Image (tube, rainbow, N blue to C red; front, side, top):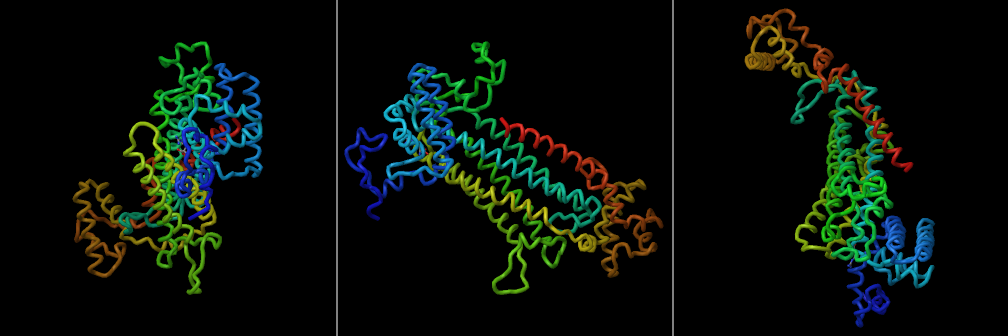
Length: 499
Ligand code: ARG
């Protein structure tokens, strides 16, 4: 592989001073991260603008110099935003690319921006900023999917279907109840992302390469300016700055070695993504099964299915199969980063550059999988008659036992007697509700004529009326709780968006 810019004079690099030899062409390709970390451009420039201010406040550069740097950085930002930024062969990563361009715009003063800063604390800061934006986007996408599930639930509070354990018909439930079971999984995902954001919004900048910044920059105000979490009031360290409002003092990392090498926030976010992937995958698996001819519970809209190139009759649930399949790479990305981290000596090591591609891949994967799943759910046709037809009276065997329990029979015995009724019906080749009163009485004299009233699926469902149960009343309450949860989320998310 020749001619791949390996002929750049080493001295043209940010770190070229001590080098006289050139970088091998393949080594350069191996080392460069601009191909993927270019996505950090917005975070990188935001961080640099704030850092220029911090340098000025610390008296390291003049206010004028800071203003020039900020003006130049805004121009670079505008170039990226307008799709006009040109990557040059010497640009190793996003940090060098921005600084190179800044120098072209504002001249030598650009060389002052990196004072006391290292790409180690810079990239850690950039990535945290990037993750915070990504978390918000993911939360929005999850909420959209939840609202699709909620809408389906609303239409199917009385739609009966078999509930399964071991994928065997277990007890009747409502389709609304099934929909909401996924709603709450995704609610936990959204909250888990909040928790992840809290630990991500801590500033590493000021850690230098590893030992700390020598120019007495005010890291706490820098953190607040960049938008990291305000420090909680009342903490021990807070007392010395009691005069400064806490909203002006953000959280900063407490150890520079940890500051430059901590990627827990990446691993955590990847875990959140993997968990979301697992939830999507389970949802997908259910719907794939439910959409088969054998079940026929649901039909996917044409917009979310595809055909076969060979078999003209096929309509395949590809949206759901991909949602299920993508869980593999989401879990893989988490594994990749954890494995990369596990053997790192303190502090920064170039291995850490390997944090980005798995992260970006997981975020990109969900950025498609979540809205596609939302669309598939929103347009899903529910075949209530097929669901109803799949109910078998044997699914009320538990209700038969409960009938006896209400007559004072201990549950264990009631369970046994009901089981004998199931066996008898099976041996007679009839359905459980087709046993005659004589059959019931043979099993136990506690069975009366009113046993026939047990064989009512709607009533069985209505009897599971506790909080979290499948009765229409309980499900309506569940829908209210879900709506309240979603409304509250939307409010905080919209508020965040406008700040
Ligand atoms: N591209 C690097 C990364 O992603 C930036 C930090 C490089 N630091 C260094 N000392 N070479 O980690």
